[in-house]
Length: 408
Image (cartoon, rainbow, N blue to C red; front, side, top):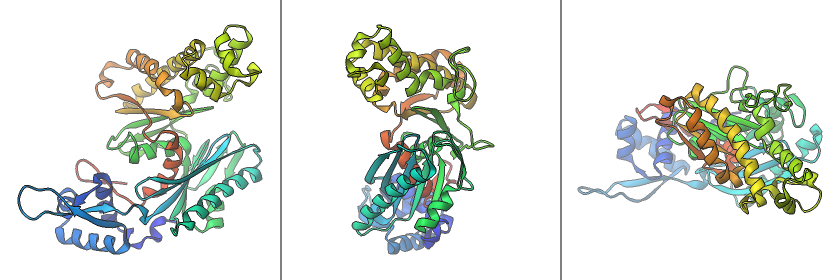
């Protein structure tokens, strides 16, 4: 199913291009749209009239010009379209409802306590049902559902090829959800969805080459090259968690030794912190564990970090050095203009980024540094769910390139 089948006025490229200019500008006149797109003014008039009639855009006040008649400004109608964004992670299912402007109107999250297929799908359907009920109670329809799935995803066929945390293989998830809700559904890997959301609505806007890195119990990345998501030949591009950063280091779940995930994932950092406590080397951190050192939680580690407990800071600095090394390898190959970092580590990112930047500064090939910036994800803790919604929203807009071409 295609969301544009439900929005006939947007089946052609030109109306989507006009919407893309309005979305990027926030507020823009018909004359400026014509100038920027190269479309004739009569064409713009016809398209805008159709978009006004469908309730996608509205006229909002007059623009400021020094001479002549002031132009009427056009803006998106935020509530014209609503999309669900669902993130199926290793231990949670999260969801948001977002409007035309990628503003979240509702959100929820539930734990995954049972990895059996039926139990996982029950939670997925529970989140979708709950969000649908909330948005429909306010009198709005939902145009579609975007799904961000952990693991390897065949985004073209809507199949979860391999989800390691719940041991799914070749699960036709898009077909399952579409048949239940009779709504368009689009799916991609969670890091890819995150990268796409950042490129459309976050800190990656107007940057053609972006690397978005998701650090949690696993580590992955989404890659935007030339303004397009790069999935790789087997939908597995961006697996930086399995770059070797510590030769001879801990054995990884993938079978190799010293992968980034074994020394910089949240699980790896927690495991090392628990070991320090049991060895009597972290009395300060032990005070935050509130009981058995083996049960030191990520939340408690974050609490210790924000309190600037020395061992907690040391743990993140060591992990950040490994992360910076893996990023340096990747930057040297891809030459992105921006590297955006987030995921579960977002609450303590301020304690991680300095060491990452320091390592990258030393390791990256000098000519690649001139335009390089390392920043937090702009969409924060909602980056994956908003990215999932973007999988549908991108089919509504055509974005302008700097040379006037469209990118979608």
